[in-house]
Length: 265
Ligand code: 13P
Image 1: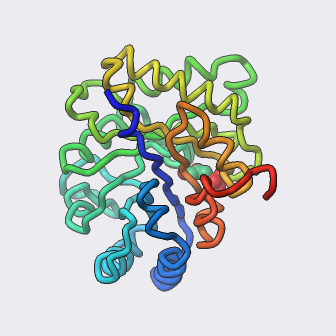
Image 2 (image 1 turned 90 degrees about the vertical axis):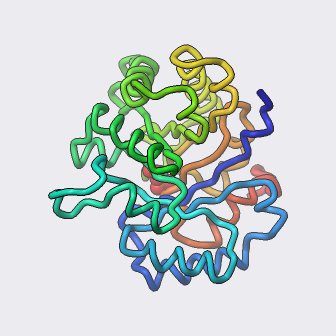
């Protein structure tokens, strides 16, 4: 299938930062900095905290800002007695298009297992949104040579039971845990190697047709200075950006990675 379907997907994961007023300001600033040419080439998703979603949705729709709305998490059930949780139908009703699932912070801090993440991926797909499924190894796992087996097992478990036609809008994000929020980006060659592995797992679990069109993001200390080198790698189709997405200027520079000579920044 055509590789051209793998348009770069650049995602802003704001984590637990920016209240709804601050969110509005960043989105508006970003809409001035990002040009039509940029959105012709790149898909942009903004993943604010739940409390900001309605505000950001309204801003995107009323001002016709061509960014997709995203969420950072979802509960696997449709509704019920789950105090503090938010369901996929609720997100879908806000025109959320992309949902991050299985972020390492959810796994490590909140104890999410592959089995739960698998249910969340299914809930997102069932509600006609697009999962961004995160996988990645710890520093210890990398040091002991287990990075590839850890990521392979995460993918197998989190995608279990999905059918090929449910993977049409799947994005995978390779986020090595040691690179998140540390300033230690994976080298572009290491990130490429792991993203190629992720693609090969999709090929062996499903088919090479699915693998060829699945977008694979790299995440972990992506900045304007390293975005181009990472995104120019053949198996890296986008970036999941944390810290550098909180300011419009730096996120816009990442979105515009094609225009920047990374040596010069
Ligand atoms: P940083 O870009 O802050 O390292 O965060 C990456 C991340 O976790 C995105 O989901």
